[in-house]
Image (cartoon, rainbow, N blue to C red):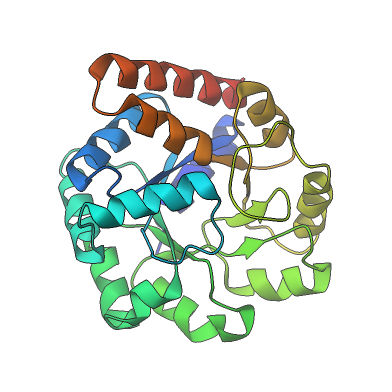
Length: 266
């Protein structure tokens, strides 16, 4: 079964273009505003939306995304609320949507039940931060059965042999982390990113997306050269937070984001 993410990468390859994946935290500042943020991303030309599911202990996230998750939790955001929001989104949009999630949030309500609901409301894939490669098999099978992509993470410190093991169940794309550490804006792209992409290419044909630390058009363009897509998160989260609910400020965020997307597409 082909997801919207699969179709997106098929279309990008045919058009000889690179993809732009935008991360935002679901529920920051609330789910009603998140719906508006997704529309802003779509209007700016973003190819795939990565929705961060807020969690009390986001170990892979830096300060910007941690604070974003706290704001979302304080506003009363829940997994079911996010599912309802995506269902509403699907009434007017077909943009691919994936979730960036920690295992406990899916395990607590029952993994299979949560995943089946995710598929029914229109979510296309899951990136589960703390799911070890050794335990991936059955969970990835359940994701695929529910019509979702299983999107794994690889890092510069991951050996090529372990990359091969991690990507065995991958579909949609593989998320390549550009540097060691947590999420967050950086002044320059880490040099180890190029080596990671080359090693991943040697063991998988699944599209590769490079993320963590990309915060300006120059970095976006550089990162896109060796990858099939790039992921921008903290820079977007920070700008949306600073813009608040101001229409003029959000318009400026959209214009900046369109410039970032354009840098990748040229």
